[in-house]
Amino acid sequence: IRSRFQFDLQTMFLLAVVVACAASLCGLHYCSPHYQAIAKLEAFGPKIYYAGDDVWDINFSACTNKLTDADLANLEPLVELVELDLTGAPITDAGLMHLKGLKNLHTVNLANTGVTFKGMEDLRRALPNAIVNKWVPWIPPTPVPATAPSAKGKQP
Image (tube, rainbow, N blue to C red; front, side):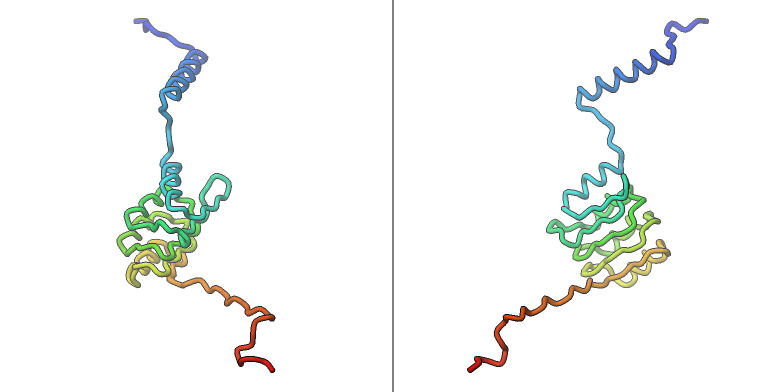
């Protein structure tokens, strides 16, 4: 029995290109879960650092739009993530479950969050190579200018 439609490799390739172009004209396109996750996280305004095409570090500490426990699910596809700063985010132990699959995490900062010691310990067990802490980063004091008035009062 002979098939009604027979295509060679060149015809198949041409057909694939035509279908892709038609889909593009209709506004259809494929977005990887990685790209979708980054797009959702960018809405919070974090500092995102890349190593090539991979997300290396995300810092949410200066964000005015704060992440919640549910928002942390957007981090799950970013398996290459190495550093994560969640300082000040209103997250709890429940949100940390979304981080347990990020085996490349080296540093997780949870300063000023609702995460408990038990939640931190659970995350440390899931990510034994990661440093999980609740330290507030040290900011050096602003030096007093040499021309500042004396605190002792008026000079004669």
